[in-house]
Length: 328
Image 1: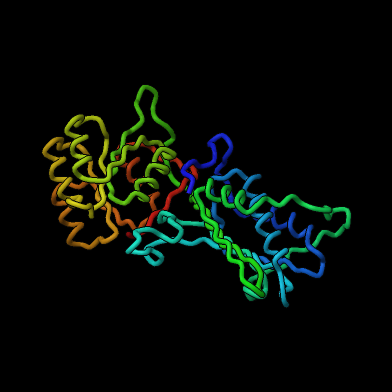
Image 2 (image 1 turned 45 degrees about the vertical axis):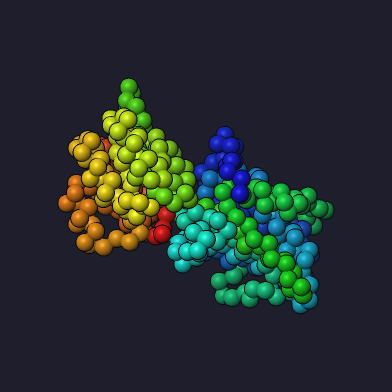
C-alpha cells in the first residue's frame, strides 16, 4: 500500500457523507429509471481527511462498475455506509496484521453491491432519479479500477473488489475515520513544540501515532524497542517532554523501561499503554512512578487529551484527526 497519503494542501478534514451523496446523485443520473439505487447510512456521521473530488470520482466509478456488472434478476444497486472499529476481532495473530494490512483504528466502511448480493431492508432509502431529462448526463468518465484503488490507498484505506459469476461485482471499501478531538490551541510564542517519545514494537501502531500526534500539536519520535528508546534518552535525557510506552515489548515490559528512565530523569512523565490492562498491572505501574496508565481499547484521542493536560496546555475542541486504536 502506498505510504504517501494525499498531499496536505489537497486535503481537508471533512464529513464523508456529503462526498458519498454527491457521488450517488451523479450515479443515479446515469442509471435507467427501472434500476433503483438503494442507500443505507448508519447513524454515525464519520469524518475523514480527504481530497473530496478525487474520492467522489473513485466512488462514482465503483458504482458504475457494480451497475455494468449486474446480471440475472438484480434490479437495484445497493450502497451501505457504516463506521467500524477494526480491532482484535479481525486481527490475524499469525500474520500480525488486520485484514488488508490495515492498522487498528476506526474506519468508514462502504459496501457497493446489488440486490442479488445484498437484500434491502427497512433502513434502506431509494435515491430519486432526476426529475428533468436534461439533468441526466449522457455519460460519465469511469476511472480504471487500478486508479480507483490508488485513490483509496492514498487516503490510507483499502478496497476489495469481488466479482462473482451470476451475481455481479461488489466493492468493500475502508477509509480511516476521524473524530472531533480536543487539542491545544497552539504552542505559546517562544516555546518549542512538545516532544513525545513513543515506544511500541507493532509498526502499525507507531505509524498511527506518528500520523496523529503531529496533527494535535506534538512532535513525536517512535522507537520499536525499550533498548532503542533508552539509548536515545541516555544520549539526551532532556530531549523529550514525555515518554509513552506500550506495556508489552519484545524483550522488556513498559514498566522495565519506566524504571530505567526514572534512574536517568526522575521528573520525566511516563505513560503506560496496554491492550491487556488489569488492576494489578495498573497499580504496579503507578507504584513505579507512571504518570498515567491508558487502555489501548480507548480512543487514541484520550491519549492526546491526556498529553495536553499533563503538559499544562489549554485544550480546544473540534480539530479532526485520525484518532482511534484498539486492543492488540
